[in-house]
Length: 566
Image (tube, rainbow, N blue to C red; front, side, top):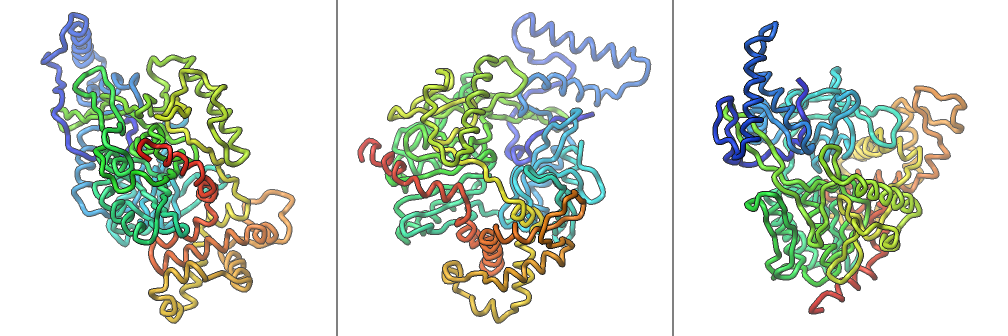
């Protein structure tokens, strides 16, 4: 039986008091049609179990029936059987050991699920090994991962610290399959994975997920940066797949004025309608803010970005976010299984539905056709570089057009569309190979080993100086090319005329990307010398979205100054 997919990170939480499903009639909703439809299910079940030509597993039949009832609903409403729920509870009760990813199963060809990385946890084993958000894991050790259930994912990837697992992945933009050997370890719990001064005025904070400590971590980071002179902030939510709504509300509250809406939910059941408003007295209510998002920013990330955009509190830069705006509640069944069911939808303060359209359902097709055309038009424009999205206002249908507090145009259709689009980087062939095969990190590790303890002692306690002054010279780059050859990749002067399965690195292409490669080598050296947080100040200098965003402090400051009371 094929189980419906569900994001693993979303199943944590307290099970709510729920419905009892049995095949006795109990608490059936009022109305003759509901009653008769329920009786029809009961009658069909009885006929099958009593009269089918072969014995039927009644438990499997019941689970198939539930799966069938959910098939026409949204993709986030799922059935989690009792054995899966036991594994989920054990995984949250046990120590945090494993490979350190959030994942989901995404339906692939022929209704076969593929295992997708929502995000690797910063500083965890998968992050160290080089997995990226969006990677599709197709093989684990010698076993195909195509068609895996959540239970099989945990069985093959979970394990005690020190044990190894090899995963094979498909990565968008890469033709070849990438292979990573991961050593399982304890998983770090920090959610603010970088906080530093990008220049003398600008603080940069990267928040990887919204967990119970996120608000506290953010406050600590902001106070530290303010002590260093921060009077404007880049809040980086790229790759942040979401987490706890309460933390999204608390974090948005630090930037908004008292009474301003953060997010609201709407449902056909009045009891599921909620409003979340700012309380005032936030730490950073008046200064300029830029928020970075991308296609892997989801749920709580979209709540924060949407609230700050609708209240003209921040400039949003990057690419359209994921579009996860459905609220799930867990209903426990009698055997320990669970219905994780959508009960309401998230809306931004201006009324935009965050959820991206899903195939099933009865949404207006013309609306979503218009959304598709606008999305494609804007993505094409994004290929030009930094694009002001407001210029498309006259081309967007009214059904997709909303206004912020000051009357600026923002656009719906699922996810948060940035104020400024930055196209997805087209990575040069040489740099793609370096990143995909983790050659930059491998060389950094080898080089630090060769340089020995004296080099580490030389830079001990001098992180700022290392980040500011250390550089990779030409001799070291030549050593890097030699290292590449030692990894079974031939370094050639001319690309072979015929395609071959043997990997090659063209010397001239590597030299053309030399500056970026050297920056990444330095970033991985910094990470190994000073910790994961030291990686980002270095690699930020070649992060196109961040570089482009830093050019936008004029309009970001104008937004802040135009707010009421400024």
